[in-house]
Length: 262
Image (cartoon, rainbow, N blue to C red; front, side, top):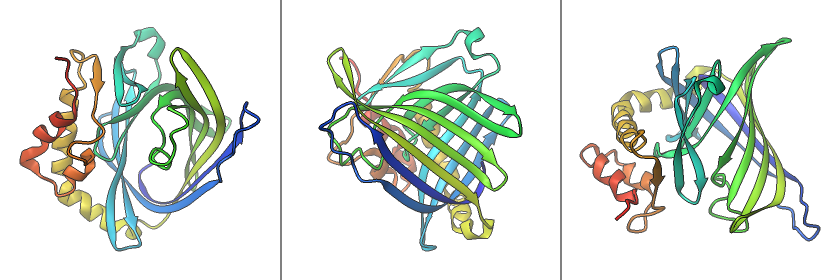
């Protein structure tokens, strides 16, 4: 999964149980993205995605961690709330968890599945409740959470991330599916030289982001079984505060977004 990729994003709503539902236009976009391995000890792998925009500048993108036989997960609930879920060792035996993080390294979602290597295929599947996707969370208010069926499959030319998504409206104890969606993100390997800007960005800033990860990690431990975050502080989301890489302010920035019980 690491290296330089041309990425094609494609999404289409396919079905709704509501005959009056107005289907949204199909979504498609392309990007150049570098995937950097930042840790691999055999049971934990961390991969940072970095966008290269028009060969002019870079943007730190999402991060994915893969954990073998995880002891616990921070599962997304709704809004900006995550809860710690402990796993029975028997239920995760031989399985891998994918943890997905936002551009500011705060949690996004996690799910556990089995990598299958059979009949010439190499793929992993799992279900996860997730926040609204980045392409819609500032545009849509008619649903609250997304239930995903994720499939990552490795190919000779790269890898694909396929999604079967349910857009779910929360109404008290009721959950209403307003639409189904099919998604496909296709990662096609290209010459690593095309992503040299991203390599240089990471070399220069990896220590800063390591400190950010460590600070978030302090708030995602077993003694904190619930994590609730503010969306903005003084009108700005977390990633804005990190844009200038203020090393001395990492702890105070993150703590300002965490909602604590009085």
